[in-house]
Amino acid sequence: MEGKTVIVTGAGGGMGQAIVQKLIDEGATVGGIDLKEEAMEGLNHDRFTAFAADILDEEAIAGVFRDMNEKTGRIDGLVGAAGIAQAAAPITDVSLEQWHRLININATSLFITSREAARYMKPAGKGSIITIGSVSVTRPRPGLQAYIASKGAAESFTRGLAIELAEAGVRVNTIHPGPADTGMLSQFTAEGADSEEARREIFESSVPLGRLIQPDDIAGGVLYLLSDDASMVTGTTLHIDGGRGL
Image (tube, rainbow, N blue to C red; front, side):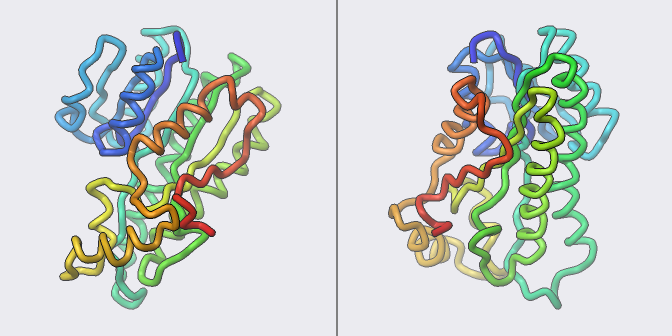
């Protein structure tokens, strides 16, 4: 990743921070996006720039890409790691507002950020875009219907964009993480449920390899898909789920 410029959304989250740190360690210059700059305080490096921005704000996102391009002269990668969870609930208890929020943050944001990335990558004739989906798309759990729809949209969007941008030399792939050891995990439990018990009984026990997925596991997959080692990989879904999707 030496000399490459990558933009990471959700850079203040557990997964986002691991991705940013991995990219910095491998020599990349990284622009991190999160709602609040304080969320990214631990990512101190002269090759990291923090941007406080709403990923649904088209003008703000355009500004981030413009600033990073002016700073480094290139945009090589985009990682859409921003996302929110859904507390497990029957569809009859899910409001239209909740549905729209999940779709907007987990899927619409990918359209907005990928569109900006394409503006820079297409003229350069290269680039790599990575979206973050979820193993729940292939192995659904009850009560997560809106979340699953949003992550399914992310995967379908990725495949559609991959075939569109292939002629320009831009690759687009998605990663389906399994149950990950981040702060978001407990948010998938039903309201009032014991989150620690759910962590053990529902999530850890569902992974055939016997442990929760760590943020560094995801970061390793991101590094591969951004790198030249994956130069012929596009339109694919990489499962990093410990076998949960089987």
